Amino acid sequence: MRLRLKPSRELGLIGLASALTGLAIWLDRRKSDEVSVSTLRNPHAGSRNLLDAFAWDEQNAPAANLADAGLYGGPALPLLLAFHPRPRRNFGTLLLIWLETVYLNFAVTSVIKNRFSRPRPYVLAASFPFEQVLSRNDRAAFLSGHTSMAAAGGVLFALLVSHYSQNRPAQMGAFFIAGSVPGFTAFLRVKSAKHWPTDAVAGVLLGAGVALSVFELHRVENGDTGKTERVAI
Image 1 (cartoon, rainbow, N blue to C red):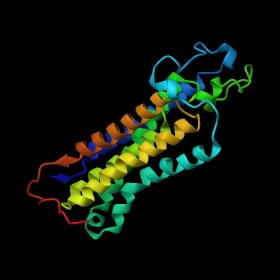
Image 2 (spheres, helix red, strand yellow; image 1 turned 45 degrees about the vertical axis):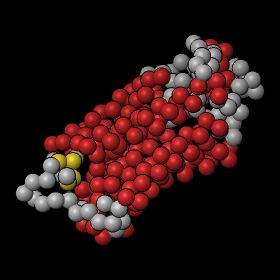
Image 3 (cartoon, one colour; image 1 turned 180 degrees about the horizontal axis):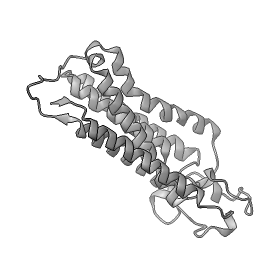
Image 4 (cartoon, rainbow, N blue to C red; image 1 turned 60 degrees about the vertical axis):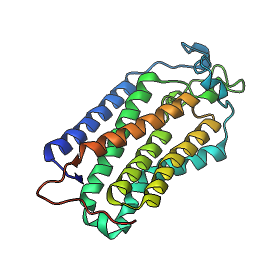
């Protein structure tokens, strides 16, 4: 198997991500009503399933700051392949696949966030002012963008390492990273009261799904252009 670009497909993916970004902006701008805890349609949002019963409701700044490492570090992982000579020969293709993955994941995440406007756990804490007008960020719980971005980057990294390498320990290590980075990011986002557990789980599933889908779209059977080079990484 090898990775190949196709102009119509690449334009389609970038166009789809751009259209979804536009939809997310439209959804955000059409919400002009002021909302406080006292006027929420569902003042007990997130408390009606067993998983979300484990949510924190008091903000934790250190946990929130540490989770940013997953937001930025996860998507950066695939770029590490530039340091190896074999993947670097095909890095233009890898870079475009990476861009499409990150952009599409961001766009889908934004649409979902702006469509559902779920209040964050700290909003429903007893210490949160009952009549305080909620900001857009206060109502951006579902789903977790930090975990979706961490998962998208981590899974794409693992798929690319496995694609180029026959080294079993390297493949296993890459998939361990692909699971641990979004997993730890999800835990930190829940601990910081920024997200309900279901937000974090949904984010991981979305990011992983986008990365896998974009990667598979670019895999083709080896033809007359030769086989993908594999090397022990």
